[in-house]
Amino acid sequence: MASINYNKIEFITSAAYYKNLPEDKGFEVAFAGRSNAGKSSALNTLTKRKNLAKISSKPGKTQHINLFRLDKSRILVDLPGYGFSKVNKKEKHRWQEELTKYLAERQCLKGIVLVMDIRHPLTELDKSMIDFAESTNRDLHIILSKSDKLKKGRIAATVLKVKKSLKDYSINITIQPFSSHNGSGMKELRQKLDIWYTNPQE
Ligand SMILES: Nc1nc2c(ncn2[C@@H]2O[C@H](COP(=O)(O)OP(=O)(O)O)[C@@H](O)[C@H]2O)c(=O)[nH]1
Ligand SMILES: [Mg+2]
Image (cartoon, rainbow, N blue to C red):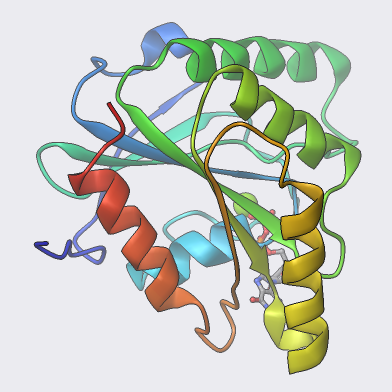
């Protein structure tokens, strides 16, 4: 399998509405997660950029879908973080509708990377996101972020616990620990993306 260069990445656009996204073609992989889960840091680590996805001091500040191009046909999507209380109701509602459309309709979306803090996995909003991925028949790859905060034993136990609680879902769900701080789990994440970007689900 040809490996993909994740460091050659360019910003394409930022869309507030689903209808403003570029044409539905090629391969897309989207990153989702609660605000503060470590999504921007994961994207920056993956692409070796300091500030690709702004590590904002105000989490959830941007409620737009941000798209980045890896090459002609491969796109990386940064979805807005959910669960940030300071975003107003109207904005939350709009975002919910746009996310619904995106997950239900986007043909070129090959998989979703869901970022969850390994110390607080499976919050109610994460579960809704997983339910929603199941109802739209999307593959999920869960990265349990900030693994540097826990000892080895606790990491393994948490991965196991999360795996167990998700075993009855009908979609493909893979789970791994990850740390942007020490780079652990980066290889696995890349391998998953390589698969989605080269060998998409029919
Ligand atoms: N210890 C540790 N902290 C992290 C890691 N990833 C992110 N953080 C911290 O968690 C906070 C939120 O990270 P950010 O990437 O902005 O989260 P986002 O809101 O999901 O995009 C920041 O203070 C980061 O420095 C990690 O792998 N390890
Ligand atoms: Mg962020």
